[in-house]
Length: 102
Image 1: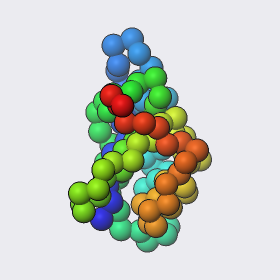
Image 2: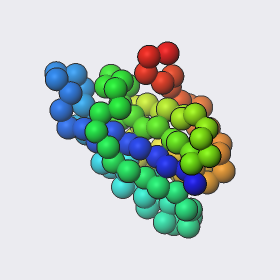
Image 3: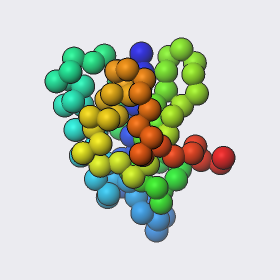
């Protein structure tokens, strides 16, 4: 099963914070899309993922131990493409970003 973590942090020490840039709307849109498609995946709002200037950020992890796929600059309109990744493994290239520190 895939698990998506979406940064919804409201503060970032003067940096742009994902929570203030529409992250909760991203979470809500993805959850609605998952329900509509009946996709078994998890979406968890979380604290800071690191790359504040790229946000709202999210990372997809698999319980099979595969490395995470990072996304940045997400909006609620990206929900169908993110759910496509969660459902079929199709990476959403338009919003894919390098993991922090790479």
